[in-house]
Length: 74
Image (tube, rainbow, N blue to C red; front, side, top):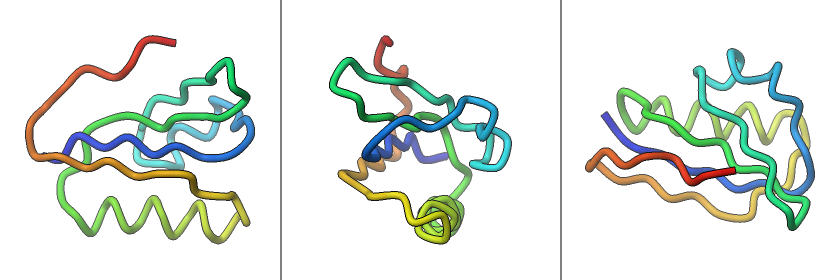
């Protein structure tokens, strides 16, 4: 499993969580959104990135680590 945090520009409705492999949607005070969760492999990470790209969402950063960590607080 890969702990993954993807920061995107703008706000994403939490209802999209299922379409993004069940990742948790966190809105930040800065106005950005973090998608956070565990994905089974690197291809799943690229799948989520591809879905974001198909929606025209601006990617700010991606952190993907093999060690599990809790998602950042809201």
